[in-house]
Amino acid sequence: MPTPKSNRTPVGSVQCENTTLNLLKANDFVAKVIRERLPEMLVINICSSPGSGKTALMQETGKLLKGKLNMAVLVGDPETERDAIRMKESGINALQIVTGGMCHIEAQMILQALDHINLDGVDVLFIENVGNLVCPAAFDLGEDYRVTVISCTEGDDKPKKYPRMFLTSELMLISKSDLLPYLPFSVDAVILDARDINPDLEVITLSSLNGDGLDQWGEWLMKKSEEKKSREKKSGEKNANLVMNDVGIGR
Ligand SMILES: Nc1nc2c(ncn2[C@@H]2O[C@H](COP(=O)(O)OP(=O)(O)OP(=O)(O)O)[C@@H](O)[C@H]2O)c(=O)[nH]1
Ligand SMILES: [Mg+2]
Image (cartoon, rainbow, N blue to C red; front, side, top):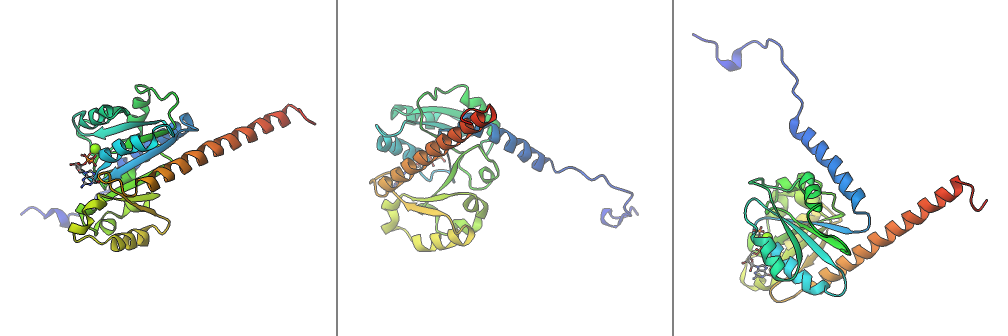
């Protein structure tokens, strides 16, 4: 009788490299290249499960920021250009990334897309990630901030079930607040769970349908954009001073 596989004596083994880790290292390298390429532009990675209202929010954000900040959107979906078409119809500078079935966007996709979108004068670049609360959490896209949208139609138990997304986000948007009166969804419970995972997580509750909370979202974006621009200006001045010191100017 053949020996069961589990009882066979080990005859030596090969220590395999974890290819997923290597992939993520390569992704982090490309994400760094993206950050260096966009020193003044605010880059926001919007993540959520499918249908939480990301595209609707982008459409409302376009109206909200008009005359204040110029925005563009790179939007990822496994198939179709539907979201980019919706945004373009709302007058937003948008480009679809079709991932060809992949469940997340990777940094190399963003790097490629940057060559196909006009970003002249753009202050905020949004990346609408593929609807998925798992894989996108592992891929740095060179963003300044990761924003997770959780709609009240999904249930208030999601943060503890998908902790990495909430751990790696700076802001949680609780969307579709217009539906709160009709749903067994506790805003307090979802915030408690999310902050148990990530105590620093900021929270805004909003609705793209009736406009509640959108002003707060707009103010958050304006503040973060100003902060990034002033950080870059300061680092530019610091570098200029270093160069002047190096060549002895002002001594
Ligand atoms: N009641 C209500 N419905 C909303 C709101 N925002 C979006 N919706 C609806 O929710 C559905 C999904 O909205 P989308 O904006 O397509 O969601 P999404 O997150 O971009 O979806 P994917 O890109 O497929 O992941 C649509 O039927 C929207 O009309 C909201 O604030 N309130
Ligand atoms: Mg969408």
